[in-house]
Image (cartoon, rainbow, N blue to C red; front, side, top):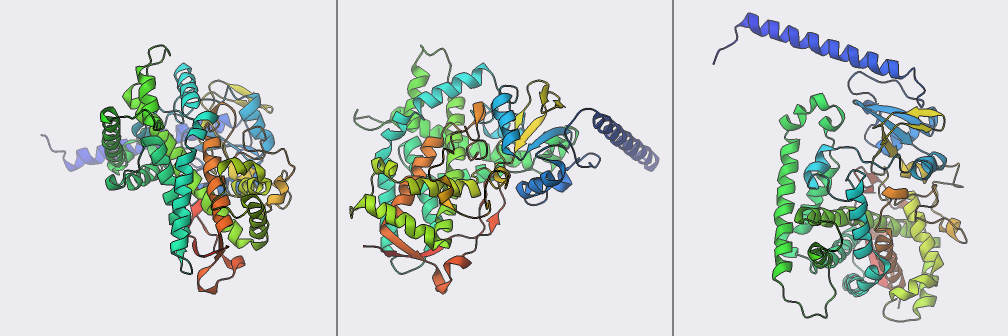
Length: 498
């Protein structure tokens, strides 16, 4: 192999630097020219990175602050990707209702492509016939009201285990966050797989998977710098995590192929999806990779979001004794001294539902909804939006917008009493599960999990904070991530109410 002399190295370096300067100049000129078109307001950008430097450690807060200056519809340049940021109910309605079809696509992102078998799942799949058929099959067969009810026994058994664990720790400190995390994981595992797979460490594998999903990938926003993701080892880590989960899921599918059924047990998600695979009349081929991608969707969409919603709901109840007392009065009237409140009684508790909604408003499970992408050019509120423009909807900011909410930073469940506002995607000031075609199809499944455990925990127990910490002084510091969770675990001291 020929070795460069020092002069050759110098010439190569000069050429590289010159090319880079010309490229930066071209990108700057190109974006500056775009700014003269009829585009939404936009903060100044830097070469190459655009507005990335303005996102900080908490993008949801940084974007809300920027929107106060540039408006509820603003355009950012994230690397080479033009990105609309939506921070009001009015603009969200335009995106998710008026122009829902035009903004129904997903961007092509490197990490989801690796983790979800080429983005063949529902959440990250591109919009088209494949996505429509897959969503229809999943909603009808996995997430219908009838199917959700069929897993009632699983939920109630896991609620019983949580209540038992609290009883065993009467008078001592309990890590409530860990207990709620186990509850969520156990229900999802039993519903999806038929058992928990403790011995294979599935929960730890899933955590690594979710953490990787939230990792910033340079190549997704600055394609010509994608080599950085390879050199940093990011893509290698993503492939390793994907391989680890794939090996686990292959084992699960094989277990289901080999298991003996009695005909009496409730089918889990893998059973149902396997039956769909065999059905030649549906006109859709559900291959094994798609099956595994859908199962991963269930866990990613359910585990962190349900857990964080529960954790924040309990935190807010403990921090606000007035609300806790009012909720306990309601559940006591419904429970009437029985060992547990059953699911059919949830409809008798409007204040419980208001508490859950208020927790979801203040602590949106996914503060920045999954990015959409414009399928074609759109005229949006007088602005010309080019094709392939990404859209980020700041559900966290919308849920705290003073234009929509009185005292938006305060935890007041009463605002939802006798209010038509719901989380089903018809009220754009409240978007914990998104809306439109790309709204979360599993919202009913998730809300039932939250309501049933919350009702029974406060029905059976009172809670105090360790070390004589006052309720109002409970630490509510947030950690940054794909979902917004507590920075520190919620530690409580339970005591039986009766």
